[in-house]
Length: 274
Picture 1 (cartoon, one colour):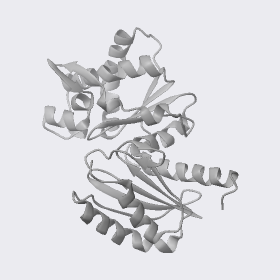
Picture 2 (cartoon, helix red, strand yellow; picture 1 turned 90 degrees about the vertical axis):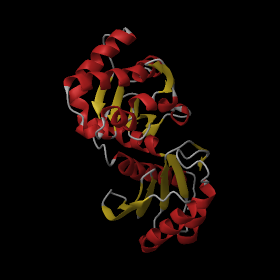
Picture 3 (spheres, rainbow, N blue to C red; picture 1 turned 45 degrees about the horizontal axis):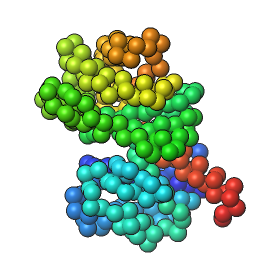
Picture 4 (cartoon, rainbow, N blue to C red; picture 1 turned 120 degrees about the vertical axis):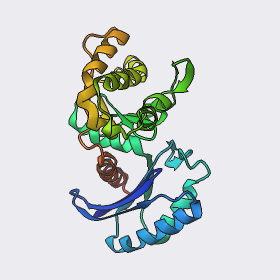
């Protein structure tokens, strides 16, 4: 038995086939074209060799909102529709297809390491996130969780949190990649930008653990001390939830897709579906 995952990102698309036990048998990636027609043609070409793997199901991760197994928005590709992807996949594979938000799938994986309610926040081009407990997404909370789009007043402007604290925003501010940012003053500013939105998340959601993912996870140890200090001041909570870097900043979504695929298989089996 194998599971096929397709992670459609704003800059690249990753395809991976994994066994039931999680062994990677094949993997490909390609830059995500801006044109839908180019994307569908490229996707078909890269997927065709995977027909021989005969997957039990296909899980598709998308950078947007998913409702009733259908993406209703796709981030930087608002005109793209789930029907287009499904048609290509159905031409090649005779198995169920499941769509889910990419950050939610990262949450599925990262939550397996902690007890209680885990919130996963991925800082990259934008800020995404999910809510889960031991690999099970908490619904409908996780589906409605859009942390990056919360509005805040910052430096005299009303901005979305991801326009303040995402890696894209930080790179615009400091002129280098997020993983290359250095300096105590810069780490303090990063902490301030993160605390702006994380304060409300902690107050509203009361998580047991918050996991920081994306490229910022690689700089975690440099800004966590000032971040905790700010959060204690801003929330009034002395015993904060655990705040941890992602176990797999680059592969959380892929690992989460594998777990999610197995969950869907079990659910279909319990319903008597062949």
